Image (cartoon, rainbow, N blue to C red; front, side, top):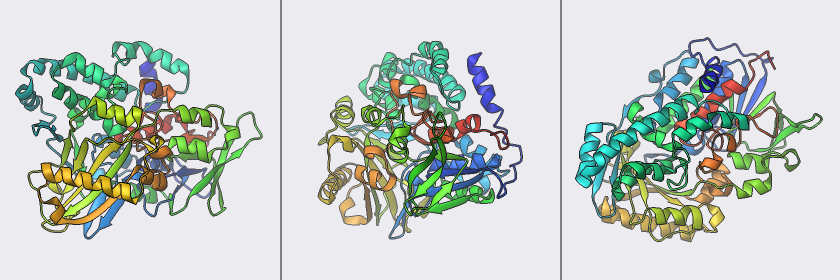
Amino acid sequence: MYLRSLVQRQDAHLNPHRQPLPVTDASPHAVVIGAGFGGLAAAIRLGVRGYRVTVIDRLDQPGGRARVFRQNGYTFDGGPTVVTAPFLFEELWALCGKRLADDVTLREVTPFYRIRFDDGTTFDYTGDPEAMHREIATFAPGDVEGYDRFFRQSEKIYGVGFEELGHVPFSSLLDMARIAPAMALLESHRTVYGLVSKYVKHPKIRQVLSFHPLLVGGNPFNVTSIYTLIAFLERRWGVWYAMGGTGSLVNGLVGLINGLGGTIRLGETVEEIALDTSGKKPRATGVRLATGETIPADLVVSNADAAWTYKHLVSASARKTWTDQKLERTRLSMGLFVWYFGTRQQYPDVKHHTILMGPRYKELLEDIFDRKILADDFSLYLHRPTATDPSMAPVGCDAFYVLSPVPHLGGGVVWDAEQTERYRQKIERYLEETLLPGLSDVLDASVTLTPQGFLDDYLSFKGAAFSIEPSLTQSAYFRPHNASEDVDGLYLVGAGTHPGAGLPGVLSTARVLDTLVPDVGTE
């Protein structure tokens, strides 16, 4: 009953067929800090509800981590490459009276991922149960039945964790207490790897079914098993690619904001969230830019990194919950080393998404998340968008990006030019020896992004790529709340708040605001 009431309370605000309210100069003003997917989605939802919206981003283009790099005729998506819940984008277009398909073409990708183990064996991960049975049987026939039982559990977790709780706020401990029985039945106390291991025994199949938390910044050996819902999410909705790259989705969202009368200001940095401290609790009244300009607002939405928001944008005297001490104790996601590159030849045997597992699994993740040391070995995610969309590279060429999970900057690794190039060359040699023969001779473009870049470009606290790690004690109520605990009129969206990172996660953080932000005329 409680879960249904939460959903009903939120769904009352979510009629995609209603007409957007008119916006005038007299409409209440909302300032959104950051033009990532969470900020853009929040701007659309607020604009539809009649708010006059201004989005501010320090980069020279919208998208945040989803910005686009271009070099020598190649187009590289900066961040997200996997679209797993297209209905969340379709809803944003529907709220504006439009259709996603009129602006963006989504193409389904299969296999979802080709997983290559260090011994050269491969596993094609798809949404087809029979195909998965055949793949599993080549490694461990005895795990086929366990796989089916795991997926039935994943479906149950999806039904509660995503459909019922992924779009509602957790504002009090009572909210957590009321869902505790359901979470206990779903074995949320287990880790992702622990739940997978309950059902399958072969170490490679355990890796295949447990790697998903790494896509949202979590260690499978530490994050709550609620994140096994991703497996069913992919099967139900598929894995999609936006033709023209993820940047085409960003451009489409910007078009919706413009159509609602919103304003996007790029190349401007918010230095501080302005506060009125005259009442019992501080209240956000706007933002102050690095130029000294103050922009007044009736409410502020921060799509900046949650830890950065509190540590650097909100005065310490106004923070009783997210103090500097608490932020330093908070476990963050890993960092990422990303190499974007183009080749003067094509590699048609390489799938759209490839995961290259290194020789170690748990031990490597301990190096990254716990010991925070840069190991000699690595596991990699290789993205080849030209497998689906040749327009991302010149004719006859391929575009790639490869990312390696690494420690965030709290471990002390210094990503200077020498360290960056040394690590890039190590990845290049590995790819050349495994999937991309002759790579060094056909390189035609090269761009790198390190944890230091995540700090410098995106203001990610300690260079963590996905903000706060989604462990059980840092989920739902225990993450920074969607409506700030410390400051009235301040709301958070993006990877660091509930429900978390990944495209479905950050789009859902904006959806939560429909429950929390008052309707125009009711403030």
